[in-house]
Amino acid sequence: MTGIDPMNTPDLFDPDAETRSLEDQKAKDEPVYRKQVAYLFAHSEFYRKKLGEAGFKTPESVGGLDDLRNLPFTVKDELRASQAEHLPLGQQLAAPLEDIVRIYSTSGTSGSPLYIPVTQNDLKRWIHTSNRSYYAAGIRPHHRIVTTYNSGPFAAGAVHESMMALGVRMVPVGSGNTERLLTALERFKIQAIPGTPSYFLYIAEAARARGIDPRRVGLETLVAGGEPGGGEPTVRAQIEDAFNAKVHEVLGLGELSISMFGEGPEQDGMNFLARDYIHMELIDPSTEQPIPFEDGAEGEPVYTHLMQEGAPLLRFRSRDHVKVSMGPIASRRTGPRIRCIGRTDDMLIVRGVNVFPSAIREVVNDFQPDVSGQISVRPSKKGVQQLPPLKICVETAEGQAAEPGLAEAIETAIRARLIFTAKVELVSFNALPRSDYKSKLVDYSEAAS
Image (cartoon, rainbow, N blue to C red; front, side, top):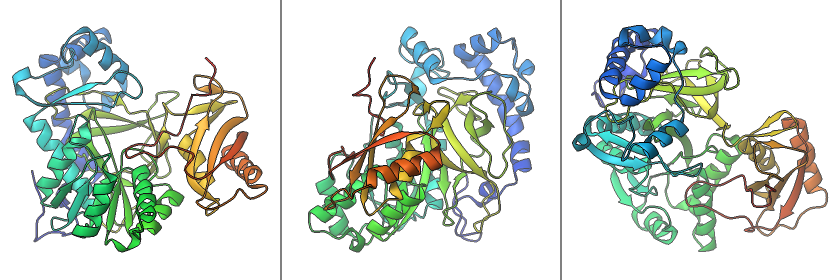
């Protein structure tokens, strides 16, 4: 694995990989992909059965990357079912248990947790991918970093090792320790923090409540991941203004790798930086047909491991909804860039209109400084399909009384931009819950069964 070459481009962690053309990348990935497919047939009972049932009996019958579109998708629920039926790690386990050095898990917010086994080689690839992404986002070896992710059980815990491999001076705090974090910011002149956008806003509120000006603690870079928001213009501006620091997004999936995407200094979308290790497709989530990577394209990324040993995945559906950028950028990174609009499993449908909670938040944030930016979508019934009006609780800004007509103005803006009818209920500052990890934008507590 390559690292920083002082004789090469100093602003790229891995210049060869990050500036490789898409054609050269595909040519490089082709033999590696075929080797991974052979590995699945040899070691993964899950994929031997799955591919066999789809009519693919040998690695040769699967073909190459151009034939990926003919293969079945993999979804999280079938992985969970396999683990429930075949303890401890399901039939997708493709390496001897004694070779597994970590067993991470997903949060289980949309079902029972999924356990993710990784070998030492898998972990090295995760770290290398993450180093590319964090370096793109502005973190450098000399920086002092506060880490707010807990070290386990979630895959984000591998961020600690990635940071150590990058050579930073680390102050581990973890989630739920805001007082300690504020002390660290003041005492150690921290230059960067990785965390969720929700937590960054919470830290700023907590600092001001304790008489600390977050703009003066010396932060330079805030690396936002774990949920959509860091790329929303109003959320980004709110965080950057609060800390007088730049916000850069990263994105990973626990089932695949940490921080597969990282946003560079241009702040023009997250570059795909898991190149060499993961192959990405883009599909229409409704028709499941491939979409070319073109400027402005929207769809759902689908991922295939190229070198994974523990539990490799083939055509794994991410359930993210993204918008793609492909134009040249100053850093010369060539991977597709994305902005995550939301998750399809968080999406609601109101009279035929697809509604992403993060898109609602973006509209509401246009009404700052009258609002705090905190929202809660309150569906009237369980499930995706909803009848209008969709109730949305919107929190007013600190010290602000609800201005006459504010709720109606927000409803009008939502109708104009998102094409559905909302019923906005204004609530006082701090009435909605804060989070030191991911914010929950949809609350079904008022929903009928």
